[in-house]
Image 1 (cartoon, rainbow, N blue to C red):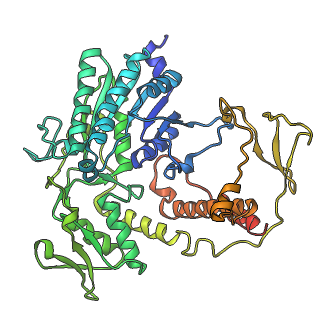
Image 2: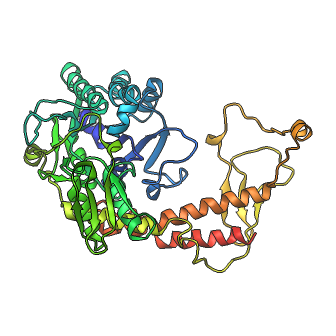
Image 3: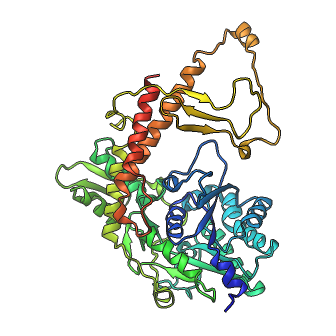
Length: 491
């Protein structure tokens, strides 16, 4: 029996994720890779890499990788059309967004452009390349749609009342997905996800702000944690559970919108108490309103204070989701409970803070080895740059770099010599750091960061915490990085 066009298209298992470098994007990538997908991700161009959450999944582009990254942006229509036309994804997960509620008040226009119109651009890109009835589309909606709640708990039928530019932008995205589903028959759905956290949560979000502060206070590097409304109540789950719900939504033949939540609510105050308790500290509260403070019951030291600058212009006091539809139709439910979530995040930040450069990460080096020498495989008089030119480690013969055509510029500038004669003459400027010292410093800094990231990943993302396969960096890579630092230091 022959498969339908839709079934054959889905069987390709090609996914595109916007926001792949974020918390949800990284967990979703792990899940999809474990299910045999080829995963394409869109990342924004910047002066530094923001791929720390997915670096453990990286495979060199010459080794048939299953995760492939593309430069792009939700504000660039032409770019989105080009990427979708090239990879023809069977599933698109739109997780990219300016997702910080407080920041959305300061950057309201940008938030609207990315979070709202960005979803429209993706939907239109899918239609433009002729995939209207083939590609399945997931839109990351949010519990912030409910805002000033009119009923508790909130379900798929609860009216929306957003209380921030972020919520309003996401409201547009929600309804444009519904509109395109009904107007064009697109297989598009919204996942209305309540708060979901993990050790990979961004450090500007309140949960990571709390767990990172608790870790630093424990290590003696911070004295006090400053927060806004500690009585706000949220429905907190683990991001790893929620990305499985996203995937399940796109496996349904009839697209529908779903709430993903735990069905439990906890205050920020309770999160703080449990976070400190993980490291053996009991917090007692004293005072009222903005004068309230959290005190270490054993030592009497103030560990938490209220700062009104962290209050939102329009506060959302209570968010509590009803996941019964997802449980019934998708067979989805959360696996990680609140206490386990808080504990994992605190211990994760404790390990990460201990592993940071300057706190012992580079104090256990192996003995220096012979300095590697790189040689050119082609003849010295061959002036042409070609993909056949490689650099070998003279000591062991291993190839360490290769020239590759895709990395050439369309119009190359082969020689850019500078003259600083005028600067020296007019204000006696001259460089202080020679080329060899510069490259050595860069290599040491890069490898130190790799070691810190590797140890942090091994320490606070243990293999047993993931159901999606073993993608965690191995100890042999860590040892290789440490010995590589010694090679550079001895040169």
